[in-house]
Each structure stands twice: as C-alpha cells, then as structure tokens.
Length: 122
Image 1 (cartoon, rainbow, N blue to C red):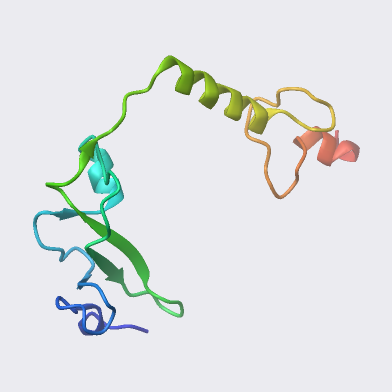
Image 2: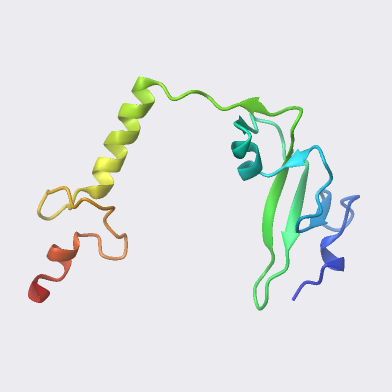
C-alpha cells in the first residue's frame, strides 16, 4: 500500500510529472471534474501534474491536473449535438431482441432487456 509520503513528488523525479497527495494540489491546478464544475475544459493542454490517492490492496487512484489559466470554456450544446445524444441514448435503451424501448439503459452484462433475458421469471 502506498503511503502519503510516497505520493509527494513535486519535482517529478519519481513519476515523471509533479505528483501530490490527495487534496494537496497547489492552487492554479484542477482535475477534469473540477474544471467542469467551473464550466471549463482542458482544451488540448498537456497534463501538468497528478494527484495520487493510496488504496488498500490495489494501486493508487490517479487524477490528472491541468492549468486553470489555460482552460477553455465548455462548448455549448447545439441542436445537432443534442439530437446525436438523444439517438445514442435511445440506442442504449432499445433491446436488440424485441426491438422495444425498455425505458432504461440495457445492462451490458445481459445484452437484452430484463424480460427477454429472463423469460421464465415473468
């Protein structure tokens, strides 16, 4: 298990990029989720650092950091993008066997809607 001290590498000597423990990133840097919460996106800029969070029995969780001053605003939702998103979601809800809209996203583990996957249970 990685300890907090192993996650602190501000010069990037160990991991190749500056690395900080969870919740200890310097100001001016943000993760993708933090950028999105501010209405921003990375905008093609390279990763400038990472945050590591140690976990028990598995490798650490990694969150990449981007500069806030180089972030761009999120692109607005256009009618064409909205239609494409609606079509994609409809395809995820449509059962390939009975071709009906299940009203929920078909589980990937089943590949079919629940009535088609378990016909004897109905």
